[in-house]
Image (cartoon, rainbow, N blue to C red; front, side, top):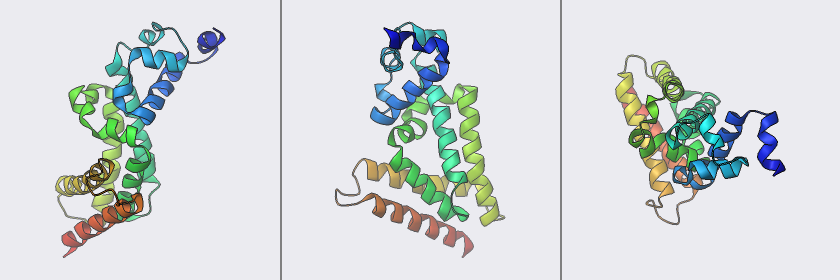
Length: 191
């Protein structure tokens, strides 16, 4: 019982968010339930409802964290769109649960983007990409380049994670494929 009372000297909301994030990272968004989060945080089953109305709010808060983590990975990337693409694919492969939460159907199905914190974190990550596009490909249609870039990266990551590229394709192969795809995309706009 000592564990269940431990949150009283800390921040319950943060503990619940850490528990949600851990579940998402380990088992994907489907593993998140109010009961599972409470158990992981070591609190009563009613405790999560003090800060989150339902599973959707928990996932929205975790998605905001995921978008911030993706943004941080991209911000630390090597210069240029190829560097940003490599950072993005590395994040997707290393943080598959987060990736599935923030770029998967959960965002649309549960309308996680309706949450202001989630929307702001997602917009910040997107703006980082758009700024790189403006710098590297001035004068190009930023929205079009963004969608082409995102399709390349998201497609490569999704195909790799679902083993659609073949069982013998390694993470290094997927990263090289993404780098090559982004480099060819950039070259096509410069041609």
